[in-house]
Image 1: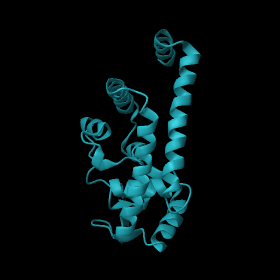
Image 2 (image 1 turned 90 degrees about the vertical axis):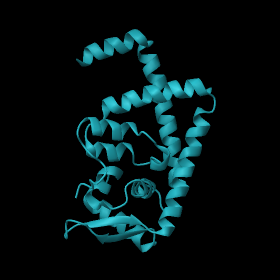
Image 3 (image 1 turned 45 degrees about the horizontal axis):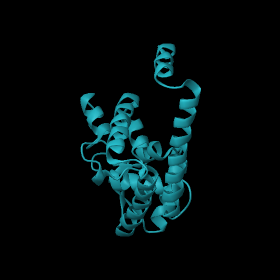
Length: 191
């Protein structure tokens, strides 16, 4: 199957050169997003993703936050401790599981998250500014198809969307794909 896919891609692309160009483009934008969003977070590393993800999904459990930001459970607990000490997030009792804590942004955390997401949006807008609106639409349509096809599961959706501005993502392709698969991200915190 992989060899058939590679042959299909090779027929449409100039083989390794086009893959290299696309890979460099993806890494450049990704690195710029991480650098810009981290510069607006209270600390380097996954704090920006944690703030953005909690804005996207208030009430997330530490377990699902860990999945989304790519840290171990212990590392996520330490991150949550630091962000709580800075007054950016708060722990509350979980609605159905007394052993689990739900995480929410404070008002200061919402301001910090807005800054993280604004810097992310600026990088993307600048990176795509060379394209005309029709090209941006085409790129987004292609990206949506790839996102939906590559989505693995609910946990993966949190990782993919960790720096998304949820308010700006009407008709989210990830939510739509999960819905088609019978998975509901709303109301599920993975506790």
